[in-house]
Image 1 (cartoon, rainbow, N blue to C red):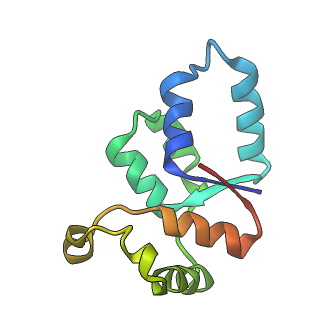
Image 2: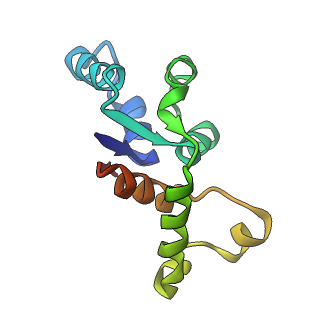
Length: 118
C-alpha cells in the first residue's frame, strides 16, 4: 500500500497529462481501484486549496482520502512530542488552524505499514 502526500499528486496532475502518459495513468488508476493507493483528509484539503488537481478525479476518488483513525491521531501526538518536529507547525497554524498534512501521512503509513510517497 502507498500513502500519497500532496506533492506527488499535485505533480502528477500538473505535469503528466492523461493524453500524453496513458500508460502511467492506466497503472495509477489501477492502483487506486485495487486499494493500493490511499491518503489522508488533510492531503485532500491541501489539494483542494492549492493544487491543480482534476476536480472530477477528486470527486470520484474522494474515498481514498480518509479521516485519521484514533491510532493515527495517537501517532501524530507522538510525533509532536519531539520538540524538533513541533517546529514544523507555524504558530499561526496552531492558533488559527491551517493545513499540515505531513504528520498525518506519516502516521497513516506507520499504522497501515505502508510506504509514503512524497
